[in-house]
Image (cartoon, rainbow, N blue to C red; front, top):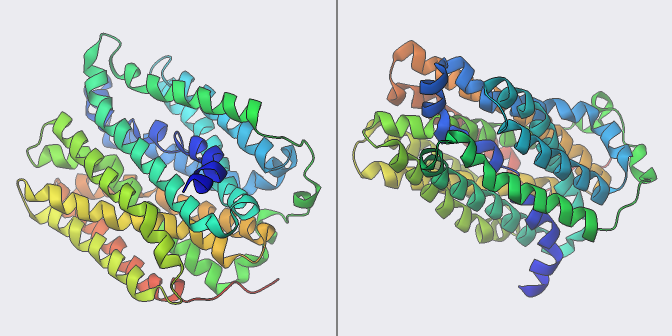
Length: 390
């Protein structure tokens, strides 16, 4: 355990801000809506803009790779992320939206580079390291969601105070990587990585299945994390209680996500497990939509367990299915570019379903459908086989 933590400490530190600074805005949406009279569409942009950046950054990864080796690229990304978090809290809505772009680019770069870092440094510990760093992301998301509303109400600073913890932790991570990690400004072995549209995996059926699997999970997560607190408020919970429910259910799922992905990744065939997890997520969100009262908390916990286990598994697939760091890099870029492009529209689509029906219970039917599609794709993704060599 100590050796695992020692090997993974750099990416564990990087993982702290890879989602917390992004989703902190979600429980604040009712506050921002009231203060700035925002429409449902504008509210959805807070999630959509970073996700579009997640997808679009893939096209530029060939050039970002030339900044240096993996350590150097991650350090630069962490620095840009810390600066963006600071600027988002500086002024009003225009600044919040503008620096969502640079924040999205920084997080996207980390999304693409951490699986590569694991391929280079993780060895046999890749499963445990992936589960742990994703669990850290989830735990920090839970903390972010839990403290956002109390901090927003604590002082006259308002919603901006909710950003401060993540500005501090983001800055600390960037400084640590700059001072402690060895950097090389040359990365010759990666300059041969092909242009995004020349990626040989674009013709690979298994790579597309993993990409779709990742995309469907991301669509479900970002739709429900964006509107989750709002949905729970519509079910009769206070905004503070809604944020806590989302936070606690996310935390429980994240803790289970540490060990279970490592266990499942060692199985020769993951199809039955992946299908069961997808169906559990779909049925749980159906329960959130149809049920009332305290049982909704149980449905939220079950839904988050399903997502929290599948998400690190989808990232781990890039590591265990790739034959070498370069192929892992190509698969990571492919699945996250298309996957996050799919996810970018998901909060807006779910918001549109609400606008059309004026019912969050009916809008949750969209998420249930995503879970059922994920179950279908899981049949191909769960097969035990490496990607073909190119």
